[in-house]
Image 1 (tube, rainbow, N blue to C red):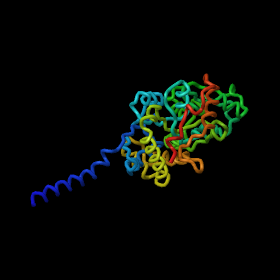
Image 2 (image 1 turned 45 degrees about the vertical axis):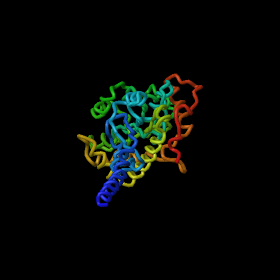
Image 3 (image 1 turned 90 degrees about the vertical axis):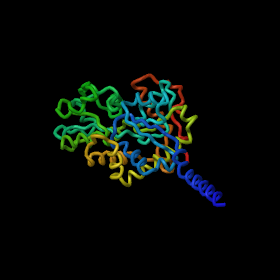
Image 4 (image 1 turned 120 degrees about the vertical axis):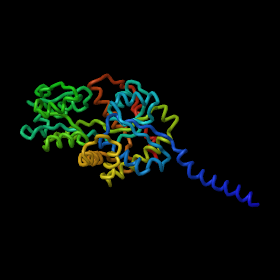
Length: 327
């Protein structure tokens, strides 16, 4: 009998251990690649991971920096990533060209970009752009659709001195006052430029004056939707919780991001980016955060058609799915 009791005891310990270890081993890995280096815009992912929001949904989320939207999307198609976080306009362009991916959530229906100027040559309305110099860079949505912006606001684009610059030189050119205007994202670039310059810059809000370009988005592959939809649903659900938590506790998101960010900027700068990003992440009443409307896609395609060839017969439903957001 003692021997039997001992065996039963060992069996009980084994069963208990299995309950402890099984949840960890049952986690679904979701590899996430950002389109760029770390910034406050991504803070909610790190807070969600630190607070166990993904783990509670059965997700082991692996977060990684990127080197551009195209590289991230390419990795997604190759199966190296399960999710990529990129500006929606780049994903829409890639899908239009045949890339087998879909938008699964758009967190910024309008990318929060502005044109900034020096206080002594302030530009806060489209008409004030005439006679000024503007830095123009390849791949910059704000200047790519400049002609559309001019048309909407009935200003003469020919009266704007467009200066072609490398994206990496845009800020130095502005700081040296070699150009009057540059485009920046209010939730990422603006806090950096203002901290470095010690100046509060006048801004021209592009969305306010009609230039609506969809921003921060979640993109998944068609193969991932077919093979990993349940895990992707749980990832998106946890991300929505992480966004709400970040809105209520930006300091915690700042701290979580900083732990993963070697040679990070100041806490104040990271927090400014986190807070500014949170203000741009809004949802339609009664819809999950990230819900994509057909109009958002069709408007983006119409905008893109001003600078590139678009297949007018391609249905908008080829570009996105809301199925992974449904409760």
